[in-house]
Structure formats: C-alpha cells, structure tokens
Image (cartoon, rainbow, N blue to C red; front, side, top):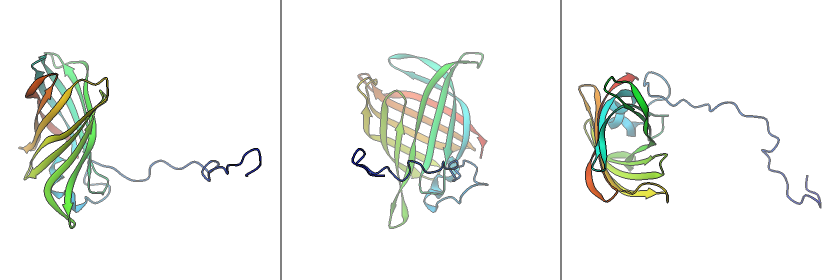
Length: 198
C-alpha cells in the first residue's frame, strides 16, 4: 500500500507464493526429454555425457595427464549447453587435484530457419576468461577459433585459441591450442573421451 511514509508500491512478487522447481527438462539422453531442435541435427553425435583422459602442456608449464568429464545437453531450443570438468591424475591414474572447468553454449548459425554449417560458441572459465569462438560443422568434425577473448583484470593473459573436435569410432576426441602469456599459438590440451551417458 502506498502511503506518505512509503511512496513506492511494493512489487507484485513480494508476497507471492514460492514457485516449484524449474519445470523444463534439459538432457544429454535423447531417449527422454524434449525433441531435439532441427538446427541441432548436425551436432547430435556430440550430445551426451563423456569421460576420459588427456594430456596437457604449454611452453610455460610441465606436461601433465588429466581426467575429464564433458556434458553436452539440450532443452529443445536451438543451442547446446556445454560443461567440462577436469582433474590432474598421477601415473597410477589417481586424482591429484581439480583442474580446468568451463561452461558455455554452442549455437548453430541459422539463416531463414536453416542451418549454415557455422557455429557460434561462448565459453567461460572460473579463472576469469570468456572466449567467443566462431566455428564450422563438417560431418562429425567441429573446428572453431576465437573471435574475441575477454579477461577480468586478474585473469592470466590469454589472447587466442583454436579447438578441433571430432567423433571418431564413437569416441569424442579434441585438441586445443592456445596463445597466452606472451607465447604464440601452441598445443595445450588433447583428450579422448568415451560416452558414458546418453
């Protein structure tokens, strides 16, 4: 109620009842949830829960082995949600410490309702880096390169990136190059992940 002491009317949601949990399904299992948006058909092989191992390195650090889990999901709209978690592993394949995390969106480019084979990708890390990639879908291969890299003031200096993904004999393989810390574009990560869900 508006009064002289309180001249602003309270918003209608102030005393509204609580809402139920998020009601829409997001899934990496195409046997459940919403139908896949037609624009995502070229990316269908990537949808799933993937787990495997890889090797990392860069001119400024020692090489390391890592485990990784990638989840690629959809909710019926024309984009994919991408989430990756990695952890350093030792010679006995045991986890040593958490490593890189990133999350983002893969969006096929549409013109007049039809896919062009091009892809726009946004990827963000908790270390203060956001990358905008422009990519191309060719069969079961996706190649992308940074169009823009944004960094918070305390993030490490990353200036460019290039990623190549492929589905090979049912596995998800990728290689990631990076230009950072005054170094030119150099190999950084590569891995082979197998489908464990979806």
